[in-house]
Length: 70
Picture 1 (cartoon, helix red, strand yellow):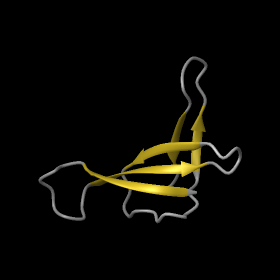
Picture 2 (tube, rainbow, N blue to C red):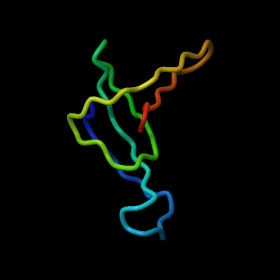
Picture 3 (cartoon, rainbow, N blue to C red):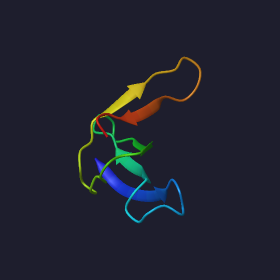
């Protein structure tokens, strides 16, 4: 579930409302862990939204999460 959304412009000189990059702080349902996911999406997701994510496991290092159908 989305707990917080941060907006980061890809191009600081771009048009307002276009080319925005979002960082989402999410709380996982399985174990209540808090993670951050970055993504370039067409429209922002609201706080409280449930987002589909994919977890990519790595043998040596941190796991990576990404939004599905951002």
